[in-house]
Length: 161
Image (spheres, rainbow, N blue to C red):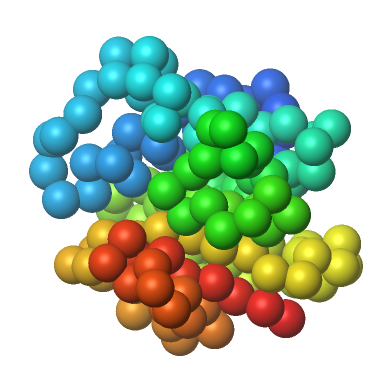
């Protein structure tokens, strides 16, 4: 990770950052969705809410006052599941690194930080969903995420400490 980048805890008030990250994650391979889609489609919108009361947690990478990456884990409910949903007691992880900052170890640093946080919180497992051709899949595998049997076509992966 670059020396001029600092990590800090993600705040529940940072919905604009989470909306930006969600939109860019959805559009990782080209423009498929809009800001409006993220704000009105339930399957996207729930990713913009960090709710510490249900146990959600996350980290922001920033240089100066600019957020250049974020990782967050959410305990989404069964009646509003995320793409990587496994169980109500398994938080789903999302990771975003701003274009221009990728390939510098920032995503790896963020994943490792949320894994460290999960260990401290005694979280037994975390999940995520990543499309088959997404280059982030290699990072997740390298950091211990494995394909969930029966959910491979959905791109669901899980990590346990």
